[in-house]
Image (cartoon, rainbow, N blue to C red):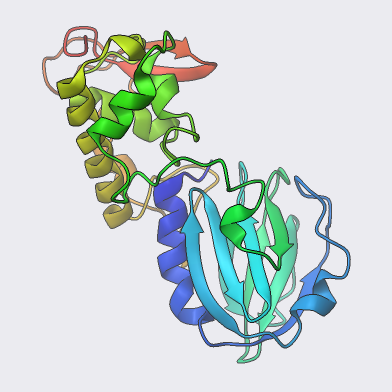
Length: 271
């Protein structure tokens, strides 16, 4: 699944090509995504200018003159900037055709992605209004994490992956941040003190910032908007490395399921 760094990489990649352009037309070949693409959206978008390309959590927000498109890539979605009129392939479900000869194409084999439309404040949309702070924003820090963790018996990994606590810390980056902070992923969240919460929050920001800089994580279902894979996977310390030696102490990396997700950690370094 594309995580926050991948979505931010896509946003930065497509924004210069979209801003200021007008939508010639929306071509929809498959409406049955995670939520059906609204009927009449083709007519609503035609002729509108693209004024902004923002991100909230893992949602791309494409601001138009009279509303906002909310785009989510789901489990396997990807975006391409292509010449308008290029024949569609299997799983190419929609094209946002621009007035200067390019189009933004959504490919989504599993159809868990979404394209929604609102004429209201997009941050008040039901899918966005309950989201926690952005991990790379000024509203997330150790104090925020400490307050959210009080009274929680759940694992700290589950807490930092809770989008109501902080958005966009997906499984890969949660594993990496917990390793860098030397915190065991199953450690009860409510038993982590101020100092460790501060260190973990800072490390989350560092890991995500580095991932954005490197272009996101290379996954089977994710390629950058220019077709080249991201590079952060080359720097992963524990994720996907079960039984390999810890890069810090040499102990074998262990794997267990926490909150229905695979967790990777060093039993010696992480407590």
